[in-house]
Amino acid sequence: MKWTRVEVRTGSRTQLIDITGIVTGELAKTGVKNGTCFVYMPHTTAGLTINENADPDVARDILASLARLVPATGDYRHAEGNSDAHIKASLVGFSLMVPVIDGRLALGTWQGLYFCEFDGPRQRHVLVGITGG
Ligand code: ZN
Image 1 (cartoon, helix red, strand yellow):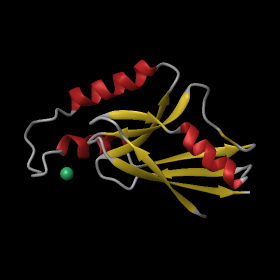
Image 2 (cartoon, protein in one colour; image 1 turned 90 degrees about the vertical axis):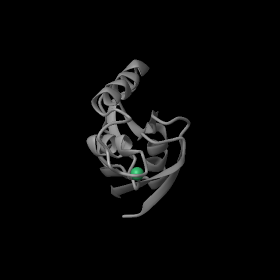
Image 3 (cartoon, protein in one colour; image 1 turned 30 degrees about the vertical axis):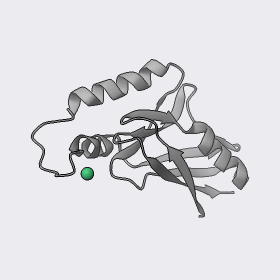
Image 4 (cartoon, protein in one colour; image 1 turned 90 degrees about the horizontal axis):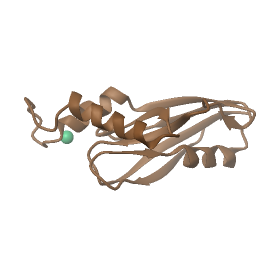
């Protein structure tokens, strides 16, 4: 399986960026009709998730709730001062798997793929791997 590096420029400290279109574009380049699409996050303070991309308030509510669960300051020892970002990234996770059926990502009607920035703004990247035939 070939992996493609996709650049993502984030614009604020915390942000959910819909990368569904980017990943769909990578799928189209492969010509794969049936298989599996993987997205991997090679950073420690950003993660990946799948959730609703129809109402932007859902992404806002996820970020607001994570901020309540994991405050920016607290009983942290990590000297870099971004422990909240590391913890949030581990909570959402670092990889996604989406089935590819008939040449399309088999997402639910309301689902989108989100790049979750927790310590931006930064230049980031994700790896997209698509296997199948
Ligand atoms: Zn750190």
